[in-house]
Every structure is written in C-alpha cells, then in structure tokens.
Amino acid sequence: MLLIVYGSLYPWRFAVPHLAADPVMVLLHSWPSLGLRYSLRDIVVNVLLYMPLGFAAHLAFRKSAWTGLGIYGPVLLGLLLSTSMELLQLLEPARNTSMVDLLTNVIGSGLGVFLGLLFEAVPHTRGLELEVADRAALMLTFCWIAWLFFPLFPALTTHSLAFKVRAFTESSPFDVRGVISATASWYAAGLLLSAAGMPFSRRAARAAFAATLLAIPAQFLIVDKQPTESLLAGAIFGVVLFLVLHRAHSRKGVVRGYNSRLGARPLAIEAWAFLTVIVLRGLAPFHFSHDATPFGWTPLGATLDSEWQTGGAILLEKILYYGTGIWLLHSAGIGRARATMTVVVVLSAIEFVQIHLPGRTPESTDPLLALLLGVVLAGLMPVRRA
Image 1 (spheres, rainbow, N blue to C red):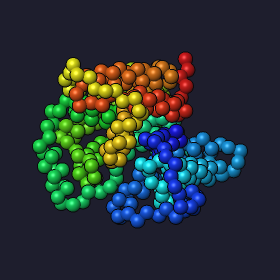
Image 2: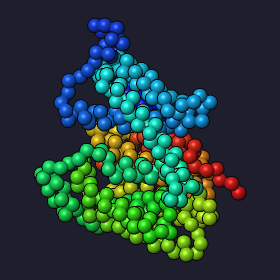
Image 3: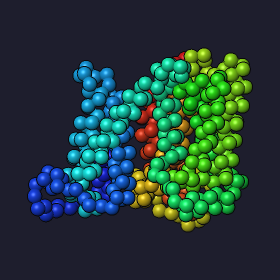
Image 4: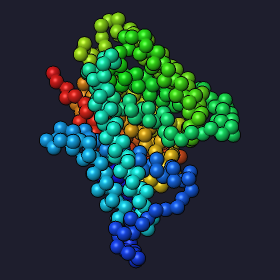
C-alpha cells in the first residue's frame, strides 16, 4: 500500500485546482478517450499494480473470523485505496484522474485474490508432491516467471521479429556479465523450484525444468524483450549445472532446499556465490572515474521517471535477484533479519561505489527495496531452529 501511495502521488508537487464540480463528481465523469494501444497498456499497468495488494491482503485476511473476508476484503481495500488516490491526484498537476484507472485497479485487486487462492492451492495439489512447499521460494518462482515474460505484450510484426533476430545473431555469447547472470538466475530458479516442492527425482520434473529454456526464444515474440546469445548460453549452463549437482546430491540422500522433510544441505556456497553475482552486476564493467555522479535520494525516482515497460522490467529483475539473495542466505543458516540486512549493506556499498562508475545511477532505491523484500519474505520463510 505504501508503494502504491508513493508511486501514485509522485513527484509530490501538489497544487489546489479550480474544479468545475465536486471532486467525486469529477472522478465519476473522468472517462478519457485514448487510443486503443495506449488504453490497453495503461489498463495492464493498473491491473499489475494492484495485483500484489490483492494477493497480500488475501493472505492477511484469509484467517479472519469474518467469513469471506479473504475474498471480498482485498477488493474493498483496493476500491478504497484507488478511490483515495484518484481523488488526491486532482491535486497533483502531473497526474490524471480517471475512472478507468479506478476500475482496472479494482480488477487487479480481484486478480490478486485469485492468485492468492492459487498460491494456497499449489502446495496441496495431489500428485505434485508439494506438501512441504517453501512459500517464499514459491513466491520468488512466480517473480522469476513474471520477469521472463514481462510486459506480456506480443510483438508479432515481421519487422520487429527480423530486428530481434538480427540483434541476437550480432550479440556476443562471451559477454561475461550476461552469461554469469543467466547462469545464476537459472540455477537459483532450480533451487527455488526444488524448495517449493518440485520433485526433481522424477524425470518429468527435470524435463520440465529444462523446458524453461524455451522462454528465451519466446522472448522474440514479446515487446521490449531482446534475447541474446549470452543469455541463452548462461541459461543452458545454469540448467545443466543444477540438474547435474542435484542428481549427485540426491544419490547421497540429500535433498536441496531448506524446507525438505528429508533434511537439507545448507546452501552456503550458493548463497555467497549469488551475492557475488549481485556485486558483479552492480559494478561491471569496473571502469571507474574520478568524476562523481550525484546520488539520488528519492526512492524509485529513476524507475518512475522512465517508461513503464523499462522501469517495470528493471524492478522485477531487482526483486528477483535481491529476494533470492535473501532467501539463499536464510537457507544457508542465517536468520531472516541478518540475511536481509546483509543484502541491504551489500547493495548500499554498491550504490556508494556507483557514484564513481559512469553510466550508473546511484540512488537509495535498491537498499530500500531489499529491506521491503525482507519484510515480505519474513512472513513466508520458516523460522530457523537449532
């Protein structure tokens, strides 16, 4: 809710307008006439913005003494919050009040409730052996899938496809940062799926995980997604590495994933290696300069000032990497608070060094985002016991 309020009222430069009618009546009559393409994208953004609210509110309200509060409560909360934001946006000259936004926000809250119901049902689905699912790992798996296919808009023109294919063939398969990032993300995805309960002891599960590589050629058909040879090479290496190591440990009777009923090997090596990848991604290509870049103290400033497709993709990628880093550190035996603060300190150091790294935007967003992710994951990760 705080993120929605912050983003909806950004940049917080209010002015009292001269309204032709009561604010509520202005809202009820605010039906913008926009182009179909713009309207569709705006609708998708609003729906995606309120889905996490409905999702989290459902998980918070589901055990209430009031029957059905977990179903209608999040929708009413989304309606109240969206109405408040639309009315307050009348005081923000850079924002537009719209009934379309209000309706799509409520729809997003409802879809979030549906995802919450699905999130609860997955660990208990028969035949999938997900009785011991790690819910934090399951949530991060959803984030990984969303990152692979965001922003979900198809790009089916021959011109777009030809441009992407040409860019793919001209890219280098030896881009170190791209290969390492893809290897780490796919290997971590295997760990997340394993902790969520995916039975990798079965051939079908291993084949399904290998099939996730098809997401890369599928990105040729998605707007603003550009697959590269380094991404494909790193993903293949990550899948092979995970399947080989997972099979080796399975033969020893050790199952990956902290939450396994059969016991687990602490993921200390994976945790610190993944944290190293985060540092590499933040500081590459290590070409430092004596000239200092101004530090941005406004949280999410660069994201909110950019195009929503670009900003959304970057935000999802950060959520995936920082959330996985916290989860791996916790799985390695570190407490939830210490795991969160470790990632926050590492990201703060990266942002400080980026002041002298040309082409980077040092700001307060990443440490604060990791702190918020730690709070969210704390409610899903199990408490470590001796």
